[in-house]
Image (cartoon, rainbow over all chains, first blue to last red):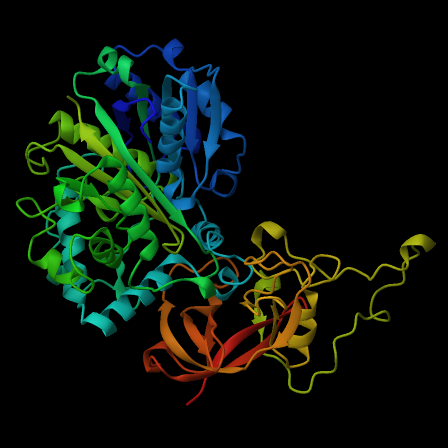
Length: 393
Length: 181
């Protein structure tokens, strides 16, 4: 990894996330306009490559071949690499990873990574159908395997094996919704999202309640990645990509590893942190994939922030909050911001850039952060994707 | 979406044969008469269930055996690895000739939950959709599947279940797990 060129994220923007009165391509247009507004020195002609993270445009928007559509909408004429990246819930990070790889290898210099998903349709049953084909559709999806019951089984096993409680799950949701209150782009702004209130919400997939689940969300986000020598042209506060790791080994649930010890995430973390030359305890904050409350708890453990079984106490003891060990999901997480599949990973990178630049509201600003990690799981946590960022200097 | 609706498997059902008398008589070119008549199909875009006909898949034996009450999968003759779902190559040694073996039909629940809201198309009437992971007895397989026979709030981890074949409305066959008292 020593021969790769330095790569930095030099700016980014997101649309408002939520149930948007806007189409797929309108969301792309919004994200593009905001990207150019956020980076005044960026000219469309600078951009040599475009990566579009989109999980299921064929199903949600009945549109294939979306990378050239996004290029047209942003006024770009990429002449090095133009492509879509698909990795379900990690499609957005996949766009960033691909742009990073291209620039690091010298095959691109200035790349836009844009993530987008339009999930709220006139028929939500149709949207639920599309979510079920993320799993091994004929053998798992056919039984009715969507994400909530799978992560509910993770929660059930974690409760059985370690005594994790519903109150500890709710503490994750309470923290992330509190952070989301200071993020105007988040889907949810619940001023009084107390644990007690969360525990009274209806069950979606027992033991998971409505407040334990991220939502079906419309949104788009975009970042600009450039090779190291170009970074200062666009920003004084580049976020340098220092580490990367990813792991996949199975897809059908019969071939899954442990529900409660995500070994694939441990491997991805070893790669990502190892390539950055740091340990998990050196992170100042982490954007972890809290598609469900139980996910964040298992992720504390798999990232090595605490021992197996201690994830529940890690959140209730405040160790993942401001003033704790490693601030987790200051953006508001998927729970507070919503989870437009392709946009999430890019929006997390936007948060990293903004945290390093100290441009987020004080209620969620991590004090003087130097190291950050972004994690996405996809599917049934069978893939883990991770990147490590360092503040410019 | 009637094609996705599930029906209870009828007891002692005669082997399902493609009816040649029920279908209206249509003149077809001679060279095409060797082909089996096509069953009604659901749009692939909205069809959860596996294609089971031999024209569509190389593991159609799984479905013919399931219809006859046997729960089968493939096993690699070289490294003896039991493969799920049925495969046509071994992912471990990449052998292309696999054996069919019969699986036990009993197991116990490792984990379960139920989807109480947000059903996919064709499964709305199934809510709550109870699902679980089942450790099959005596083999290293933990299969995911729909659970029937008891409401989700009366099921326990460790409870015994058995494989239950059932017919889809369009004549295909699939399996689920029946929770035993």
